[in-house]
Length: 465
Ligand code: ADQ
Image 1: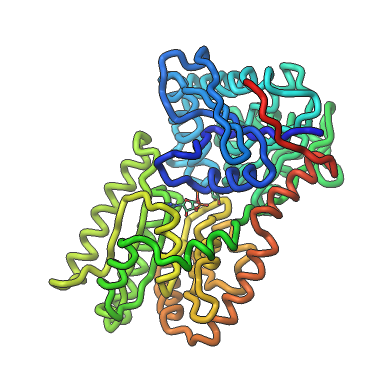
Image 2: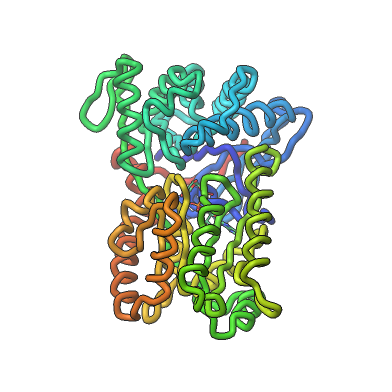
């Protein structure tokens, strides 16, 4: 029986202190269910880098095989090409992209190192599942090392339109490298189409049923929207949570609560959202004393310039809004750059009347799904969701869909959500929840792996690395 090996840039160890991001939550839950090995960076910088030994820990059905990165690799591969070129361009922020050839070479070098570390672990019938934009070229290097396994790739972030992708100078080499995978998976049909369009138009690749045909292989190009473990979130949300939840409820008195939860990232549309909240206070001053907006923004990639800039702008905007609208005993906007345990976060989502999720561009957005799963079915809150989140494809009937570039549109949607009658809220929530159950985390994993390895089963075995 074949085993499952998952590879992503970052591996989150079971006892890690930081709250995990979207990819980690998805991958860990998927692996926990089926068992397997997870290979990747341990988050540490170490002089030895590529020469350092692999360390291996097994916990809860998952073997974590990790290694550190050298400072230069971190600077070029991670901070450089991955997060200063691929992330901004794939989120349509070409203005923030800073391409340097040495960063790209470092990116390829680290992709090659990942393949070299993987090679001795792999048996011929193992199934390999690679995740996200840091490792676009890994499949190519695996093939160069002679791996003939089924190797799949899933992109957690959007794939941009052809002309936008072409702003990445080595676009051809990257897309060619992606064609070394047997399955290339995306969050939405639009992303999958953009990738196929690029390959057909710019590489001259032949399109075939279900994907593309290259000289070497049939590449399946598919859509696999990531989901969540609905019951897990609902169970956590029903618990009382920590003293922080209690304190928030007491502080709110009878005020309604609008909540937003994100990694602090320019793609998440926080500034536009702050402006919409301010507009709400302007068009309906009565809300002034009857509503609170809590924005939890977990800081991330703070050594990348674009992230430092957005953080400064948000600090300024939050101060201005509270300065203008606050009262002695009350601040309308509470903006916190902190990491919260999921056991705290989910009851907070449940305690709110509106979930405001308005990215300017997002592969999927798991917070939108967590918000719905966390609600009480008898008295649910309303999800206000950006049309540019991948999640909007599945949630457009139940959520209030907004354009985050239209401040008034968002303010109106907030007002409508705050006034929505209970019967309508229940009806919308019911539909949304049904969708979440159909496209949950297990469905995401099973559909991807079914396409990758047909009906073949895979199993977990502990083995020494
Ligand atoms: P992210 O960009 O990280 O993920 P998202 O999908 O919203 O975005 O996931 C964030 C996760 O981190 C959620 O599970 C959320 O609960 C958690 N989180 C956010 N802020 C937090 C805080 N302050 N404290 C604690 N936890 C917090 C990438 C893509 C997304 C895609 C996912 C999964 O950018 O589009 O949905 O991968 O594929």
